[in-house]
Image (cartoon, rainbow, N blue to C red; front, side, top):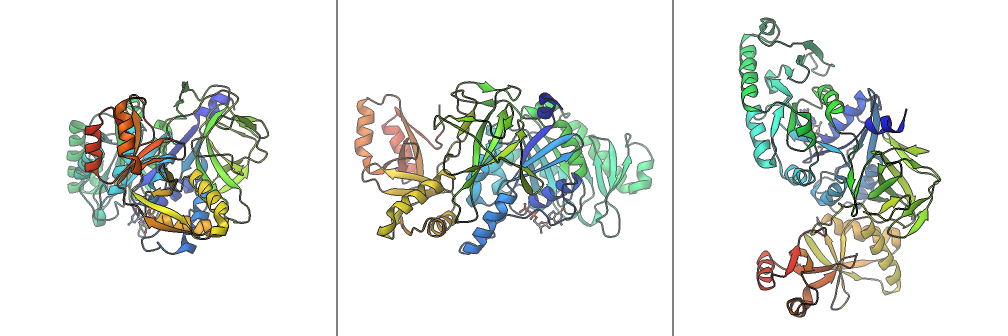
Length: 529
Ligand code: GDP
């Protein structure tokens, strides 16, 4: 197979959802269809349950699982599918945001009874910002839930999407009979006593046909016809380009647990979802079809074995082919690196590969060369855009609790920050270190890992910050900026890239500050124009 065909057949995507909507179940069913696994239960759920907060063993176990489920690849029809794992737990939202920079599309799973939940809203907002093509899968139709039309309204309003159904449920919960597939124009009956059998599909291009009554009964048939008419009137026709441009989002219904509606989703997905897309770098747009290799690090995972300090850096290949033992240029460090055992991922296993293509994820063993966001090229001085830091929501001083281990502590903090576990801010005034996280759970993870992997001990101390604002003065030499620096000096810090950050204690302070110093701009993410 040629280079271009290899690119065209790749589908790299993420499944996002609020915890418990059915992301793990759906992932597993997709792998079953791909023949990549033989039985249910093979895909590990890497959820951290509420209440497991102080259970360190649980955190360790989760880290192990999260390596094995980071990328799940399989072949389906003639396509190579790469599913990137996105943690649903809100304390790991930052990890998910970063993973979203490496996907070419997403599937959003929504629980039919719960509707759009908080975490879904946040993640979809990020996808919308990045114009990532989205397919919506409404799950758990075997249960009583919200009316399908109401739910689509909710999806449009809360998620700011424009939807059009490509499948539609016939009944729901106890009366769930199956699905009308608008994409393939057939009916798929939910059958079998156990309701777990692989479905029976009946081609049905004309719903006016009296055959419909025979199959699903008079009343449901009338209802379905009405509903399809309504769909025709109210929702836009599906248009692939609109979907690819992020302007239209197709909706599917099903029950992942019952293996129902999943094949329809997958068949449509492989047909419409984008192959690897061009990606913006700071200097230019990079096309996947370019011959020269380029890629970027979107995730770093520490080795599970504390005796081996090496880590696995996950690289998304953007262009060209990534080859084993070939030197690549590490743009930030300005040096060439060679990798003798790059890992590729297949189903839930990883293996050494000689060549990878755009869209693929390669796992590279790393002894501390990589940070999240790093770019590899064949020599071009170029960095990919798009891995911003968001303002953390919690802030604490980190103190050394063992004076003999100051070096270990610094090294540990440094490496954990490179992995993206949390963000470090160093106060300008006194060089004290502040750790910012998305969730409180991270503080325990950091403390535990510092002790077990680096032999260092730390304590925390509260620091009342509401938000970190990245600071950009219109004119760094202006009196206004000098005054801002003088007045706010107690609250100024640097992030790990040396960017100036204002640690504000409230929204009110941010507002006041912005009013008083209109030429000193404050940003809530580290990426700004
Ligand atoms: P995740 O947190 O989004 O990964 O959700 P899981 O896949 O772990 O699913 C959460 C729970 O919902 C599990 O108990 C699943 O068995 C259940 N579940 C998933 N899909 C369905 C479905 O289609 N119907 C029903 N009734 N339960 C489901």
